[in-house]
Length: 254
Image (tube, rainbow, N blue to C red; front, side, top):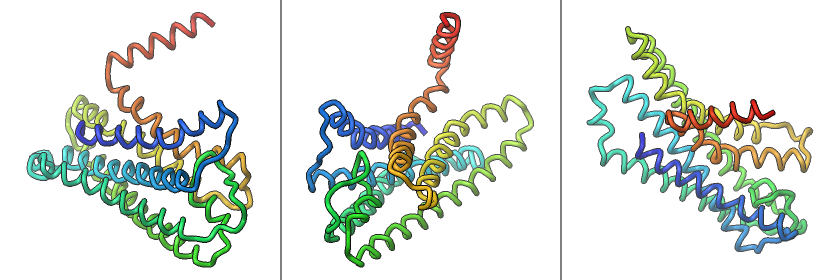
């Protein structure tokens, strides 16, 4: 789990560094321009890091499933070599996915201006600038990515059903609590990531507005990577005690 947490932290850091520094620079210096190459690089990186994060969350779900439902086979199924291969597959698949989306999106002719209604380059905003019917190719890639993501989501749901069934069969309350405590941070991170992405993708076009689109983009591209370290760190007793002291101190001061 800690091996995969390291990779998850790297993907979170990359995702934050792709969008936030540029947005802060534009806000502080009152600029709102980005080069064509810079926009392509930003789009590639955000798809790459978010795709890696989702792949790692799926692998971490499998890690929890094996450790709780098949503990005697854990060393065989999730040895150091198997973990390295799965982590490499997560990064490689996300790289290939990001490369295909970026190449497909930026191969389209842009004839509706060059103004993006967003604080970073994302596919829907770029497609709005295209006047070519070939953007159906990119829509096809989006549908394929959504189907693969839905398959990972179904796998995680099935895994957690099996995990909860196994945990409820543990005779001791202490054992059940320990098993649940190892799953709850991962479940919280998955719920946050999936809910924000689904809300951003499934909202009706009739309720779309620039301010809402901006809020949703922040919700799925910035909030989950920023909160993931905090969610996992709350398992640390010293950090929880420090947070509790901070909250109680603020309460008494006000």
